[in-house]
Image (cartoon, one colour):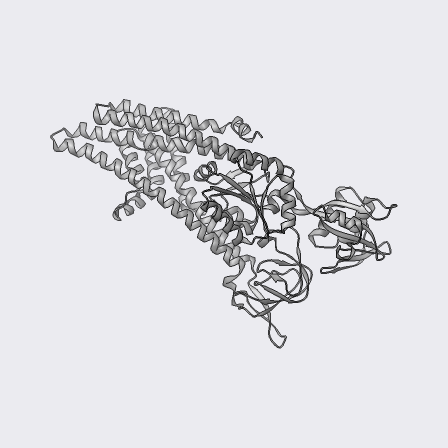
Length: 624
């Protein structure tokens, strides 16, 4: 979906251009008719949507803040202050377009999640005949055939065959999992090199993937209900200002006051009581913080998100792709012969693994290249699901296989004790070396956890679909005491709900599709964007483009500073409005002085918020 596909974005952009042109013409002392025309064009392009929506709301006996802004803008133009009105129009036009854009992108990404499961499936009937059918028609009890490289069409159990299955999209596990007879498999996961026969155990509408979509939609609706409560407060404020303006205009007229001064007083009231200063008290600090974070690799999707980030009381972290890099890497190479070096063992393994598409094989080959080793060619390559790979290297039979049959070897047990996945290198059937592979910890993981602990005064919590042993090993390395492992997406959502019920404001950081429901359920979410899945990026409230975990505590600290600036600005704006309104109601506030006071408070809060644009503000936030 393109940015310009959203109609409100085009109108907001046009209004902004017209406003900028009008301001430039006004500052250049061009003829008033020119910049008035440009400003009025801004009114029309940026305000017609809010005006139409406001009139519809009014017809339904509701008055929202958008209509109040239109009335205030018209009032400003009526008394000659068209710049104020145009600025208000632009602010609300941009805000509305960003909200619509975020809504459409999230809906689009949720729909695209269903593409994980294939459209077609190969069903095997009782006579053993293969029939290609739509995957959506699969029912519990159907038997399907899944060939190498295909995605599984349904949730089920393996009834024949074995293969390594990449199920990171569902569980978050970095390593492919060997699936054999009796093992559970999920729709949308990727089959490896073996052939599987799977008995479907759930209808297509009840698969884990379908439940992820439902959970994201449900959690998003919960956030929408929270937004509705905010809008009710805005309606009450709008009704109060309009009623007060009408009273200030109608009552004196009824008592015999003259029309022109009464109208002027009422318009002055609407100008000084309009929440322009309050809007600017909030938006510049938050937008400045957003812009600053964006320059440093964190895309925060809205000012509301920045505000919610500041309120986070506990941080929940995913493991794979968040605390770790999300891909296996070689962490140990142990020769079993005294006359062999680790480079020789790694080179031997890479010679046969270079033809493999398995993630562990790619990790071995990449490690050899990083060491600058010259990798020999191999012949007669063969991959056996669950048993590794083998081939001929310089006339010798070489194999790289799992460690199950070789745990008697002390080197195998020692490497496994570090939490690594172990493969054994065989030459002519004899073990000659051991290689350990792990999902490597991010270099900044421990520092990020420490910074988050200091900010929230509570250590982060680890939620993962990976095994308990692996999860606790990673948690211990980075200083996380609370671990919940082996969780499917609904388990993560349940854990988030429990924290919220205990009164916590939850920020979750993750990267995979399996994190998306929890991200939607949490109060705020950040996606590790470099490797993050489309749905997690779209569902998340913020994205770390540079894939640096330390940027999470930095943006959290920046959000908290922005909140303090917003609080100070709100006090300034509220005091200014109260003084000006009181002066207008109980005294005789001259229009120029009212505008000057209104504009003065607006400028003060705007400049105060713009301080968060500086690199110094980010450095202070990023300081450990």
